Image (cartoon, rainbow, N blue to C red; front, side):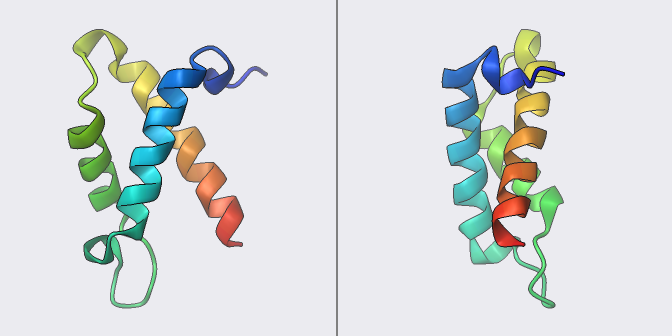
Length: 74
């Protein structure tokens, strides 16, 4: 199965950078040290500001970036 990032690598890099920045924000960390993904989602969406036509692609790329970051922290 192809990943969305292979179809839109530049957009993926923008989304990935937004996710990394949001994950590093102390306001997005729960008291137990876990990541509050709802806050990360909100920060990233506001930062990237995808158009209505590319919102679905944005969320596919966002999921891929989040999965990659979770794998890095394991």
